[in-house]
Length: 345
Picture (cartoon, helix red, strand yellow):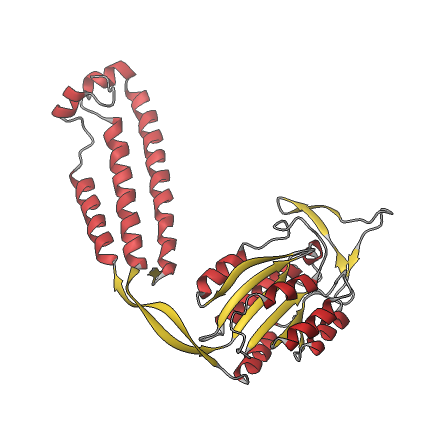
């Protein structure tokens, strides 16, 4: 397990393409200047020890030095001690709607991206709770089992898209059924399922399945993303809108936020419905709900001690810089004899 302490320093990697660009410009200027001074054969006689390879090698070594210095500034840390700790929290499963209707842009930037933002901000405000993720459309698919690894949760979340499931539709009941398999402790009462959707459920059993889930001790909270006025579903290629989804009659499909469905599901499972338009309000409401729940103690493995590793990259960077300083651009005698790079002498 490793951590990156100061990720902002990765921006200094922009120096490397600048170095390469300046080198190419210098080579081009030098070539044009030398061409005016003398022809190619005469230049070889005037400067027989000039090596193009050594010039490129110097730039490569300099870039490697900057790369090492950048990693040193970021300061990677490696976990050296894995220990089991006892934590108190709630098990939360996020069920994210990835049907095509979530591409509608009636809420910026679109419904799916807004859903990701909401889940990310909720996770950022958790302390010791465990989380799991489900993606669903016409079917439900497990993305991440219950875990305390929030970084992995956000990574899986960011990779979710509307093409990940071939079966289209919005079968919320499938997501609820799958969520019941996530909770492994039958005596545990603090089970939470948060459904993020536009509520366009194309089945009639979601409320009944939510009631069954409540009987198993699962509370369901629903977050609606979208607008009741609705919007079309764009068909894009490379970020450019080519057309909008149409029905069999050739009419543009308008998808709308169905709050009634989401409210009914939440009511059946002793939960609550939250409109997802304002991210701050959603996060505040969820935090207050979770704080009011009983916390269950569980064991989790985590790395306790992390040791800095910047010194290795700092030393390597200084080594490359030392080589670059003393690396000459002319051919060396032993390289001439080896002629590894097929240079003409």
